[in-house]
Amino acid sequence: MKKSNDVILRTVAKVASVIIFTFAINLFFSGHHNPGGGFIGGLAFAAGLTLLFLSYDIASVYNNSMLDFKVLGAVGVLIAVLTGVAAMVLGKSFLTHNVARINLPLFGATQLATSVIFDIGVALAVIGTAVTIIMSIGNDRQ
Image (cartoon, rainbow, N blue to C red; front, side, top):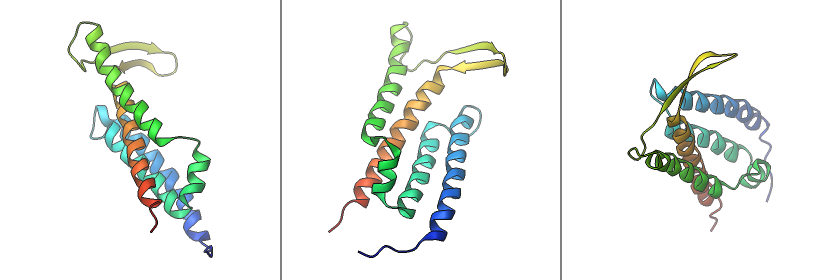
């Protein structure tokens, strides 16, 4: 099989994927006050990985990522479920979230919400599931 010379595609993909990953993080953190959150942030992150899969090959990106995306998805679901169960352990309804207000030296008065932990779990589950599906479709050769 002959390798093609995709210098322009790979160069643009490197820059575009960094922009997509940055936007995915922005979507994740804006989810508490604006549209966004763990689900759409995870999908945007998976889209950035898909761009890298298309620009390079799946094996190269997978070998350099050092992540098992199936395990990542399972850990994400576990985090999301444990966030809900933690509220039940404290005698509240499933997925009842708490907010703590603390004063951080660099940021000043800051709110820490347990819903961020839930969103982290959702994002990891979406990234793991989406990338696993994309990789299984990409590796399906006939």
